[in-house]
Structure formats: structure tokens, C-alpha cells
Length: 172
Image 1: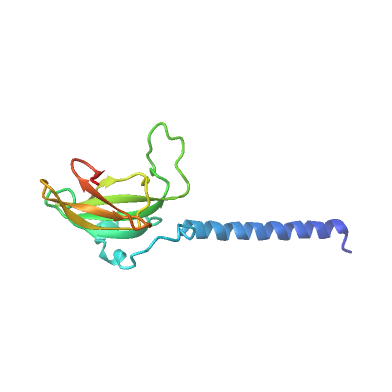
Image 2 (image 1 turned 135 degrees about the horizontal axis):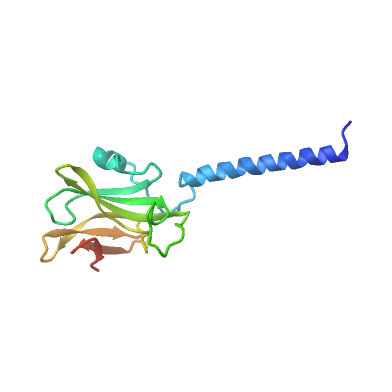
């Protein structure tokens, strides 16, 4: 015989199960980057252009939006520049004043350099303070012999960045 209490308990269990299933689906979609901004234009060919030595160093959870290969730091070695979406700003190690890393996706620029013994990360930005839709090789930075990095924003604006000493610096 079905009592009101057992019907209520069944109803509560069904609701809890549905909420749990919905939460799992939302978590999976979030982990896959489904809720990233709609303006992102994915360069579907860039994954095929990334050298195997660099691919081996990438985290599986990173989403690569764009890729370039050129000698950005002027040392004569080929560099691989990646526009990356990843969760958090720091990774396993973070500044002492940061208690916990962010949980959401943020955009970063990672640069790897080809040396005699393989690919090495030479610069990994924290969360970008701006949004980048894409990037391309820019013009030569006067007096350096190095090429700049042109970054296009979703609104069409453009900034130019260069490797002047260590890391990317805004040129104009």
C-alpha cells in the first residue's frame, strides 16, 4: 500500500536524481569550454601546425585558439606562440598572496622555444587583461631585427606587442 510519505519520498528522490544528473551534464560542458564567450573564432587548423614536441608539453584541458611560429625573441631559434584558454591563472604554483586559483576559463599567451634538446617554455602569461580574438606576425620592431606580434580584439581593434627584453611588452 502506497502511503503519502512513500510517494513524497519517491518524489524527492526523483528530483534529487534529476538535479544530480543536470549538475553532472553542466559540469562536463563547463570542463569542455562550452560556456566560453561566443566571439571566439577557433582556428581549427592550428592544432595540426603545433610541433609534436610542444604538443607533448600541453595540458589536455587547455583549449588552443590560435598558433604562430616565428622567432619572436630574436635569439635565432624558432618559437611557438599559442593563444590558450585554460582554467585558472597560475597552475600548481602561484604567488604567496594568492590563496586559491580562479575556477573559470581565462585567456593566456604561451611561448615555447626550440633549443638543441627540444622545446622549452620560455614565457607563460597569467590571465590576459584584454580579450584576444586572434594574432598574427606583425612588422619589424625598429632597431631590434625582431618581428612584433599583432593581436586583434573581438571589436576589431589591434595592438602590437614585442619581445624587448623578457616577455611581451605593449609597443602601441
